[in-house]
Image (cartoon, rainbow, N blue to C red):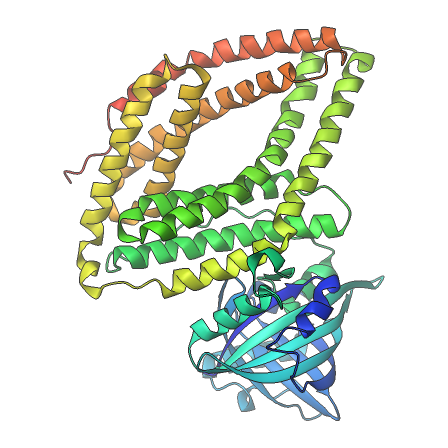
Length: 512
């Protein structure tokens, strides 16, 4: 089966001149091709559900039929099956194009029901570069996707790097070099970032009037035959996929001039926490400087998204609390207006963090480093034992934090909450390597603890917010809300002692 390996990068329009002046591209002789394509699907969207694409593309005087399978994609780097051949008039003969008999038979069954779904019209500038021992096709596409009734349009401005032959690392190195811009420095990087969604996925979404939805982390299944570094690599790729799925939703909302979905911001922060938790968990098998650097980079991004998440949580409790206290609309209005203004500013900060040039450069550099991290084949047999030892040590640290939580106030509870999250993520990463029954008991205890501690943290953040409001902003309403927060905190503290007991008595042991 022919396999396409490519990296798709979105480009900000204002950075197009800088990209074209990059030393690697400035002297290139571009081949220009207007391209018009129609994508097909059945009325019940069978191809979309299978994450496949069938398109008819006009290039010059010839029409080509292309079939693409779902494949895999992470960090904008995708590998998938692709077949392409000249398209004669009439119903397509998939058996003559696709060399996978089962797939060809399936497409032949669908063929009578295929109908146009959407189209793309763009100018492709194309050049083949030799870079890092590889031949790479660089294609710059500029145009639009057209779909729906009434017609809707979405701009296309993206760079596709396709590996023709040579190592995948060369593809990633070229992408990162281009992202750093003509100056070759992170500080002068271009707004060029890897994207997961293909033109087909974007076209289907446009045709259906959909925006990228919030995405939760998918369950991770680690093969016990992996080495610890191999397990870490698989964990990192899953976290990057989770992050990018939600980053796409945040970016799309900003492009449409609306606030991002609160769940997208929450899930982006969860992805970053999972990523950083895995860096800490696997730190003993990774270079120390590598771990410290990327903990700092992704920590900075997580902190940039923090105010938006806090503002979203605030909007969840603020109005019900004021209504429950019997505050009238006139008393509620100034606080709601202030909270909404803060939410808009915080969301703008989150969008800025995910659209600044360094975000794309960091994603590409990290993906390249993850894929290139060396591992020793001799380590594979010890993954299960290594995983249990790491979890046992981290649970001992969790026990110490739990013993201090009752007496340490908000700061101690915050430390315990972070320790619980890290332990929970670690157990999710390594779940397939643990005794199942004891693992489930441990996860239940951690989940309960995270819920109680999360509610208490929300109240601690609410108290800080109220104390930082301008003195002349609805002082009577603020005083009543502060009393409500204190009462809610006291009520929820009643569950903390049970949490401490459940965590100190370890529900999972390394003796199975």
